Length: 178
Length: 178
Image (cartoon, rainbow over all chains, first blue to last red; front, top):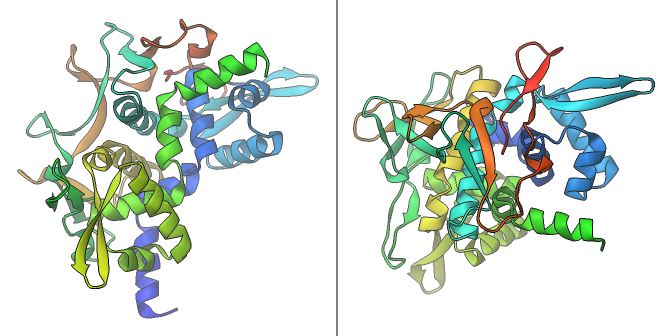
């Protein structure tokens, strides 16, 4: 492995998006998590809802349990049967699933959401947004910059402004950067 | 296909999370998008950064281009060579990637973020949150309820409160629902 390869591997492993995807970056896994958020707790119900093979569902649930994203809670003892429930770590994936859902509402259903998520307290449809707590306002991707955290090498070209294209495809402009 | 199967398929296709995952629900695709947000625009640079096989990278970029998430912009004409850039549809995936990144920061790096995203205007670290615009406050997953949108069958058991487990694993409680 060359020095460049080592640096690349180190950079990859330090990336939080990659770390997240190592745990949940699989289409079935994300659909299982969606079902858990919806209240589907039983193996057979998930299998029916998703149309997934038993061994694949068992594999994904086992990985999620190992990663402490999902916990097994017995609901019957002879024979033992389990509910699958989200742990606090799993519940914290709510923003990720909501952001994926909001994107699908806008771009796959023309903004006409099949399901509307509302605030339990007042019934208002919810929003998911990237915000600046100091300016107290939503921040568009083009106004996002990245800095190296504590453990990373100093930022360089790797965090150049992103290659984003705006309304006119003939004039690509800089976008946000992760 | 039974009536139940048909209903299940209809429900699946109407789900915006599933619709999104049909386009970007693949680990390589999400890592390619991350690179595009970071400003990696060239095929060879992505290949080097990700350590992905040429044919797999070409396949994923082709799918993203077909889905209008990414556009090819020539930067050289003889021979023709392209930059890959995010379209407005692609740029709108920013919240999804940021939410996955924030989760990785919290749960895979003990909150010690390898990369910090800040507001370009003031340098303040950004937050991603689900908010109620009426109450003007962040909303936790346990205070989220779902309603059927225009085109969906009326909500039933499928949107029961989610199986989430809080701090004490022995006492599962209701969570949010997507």
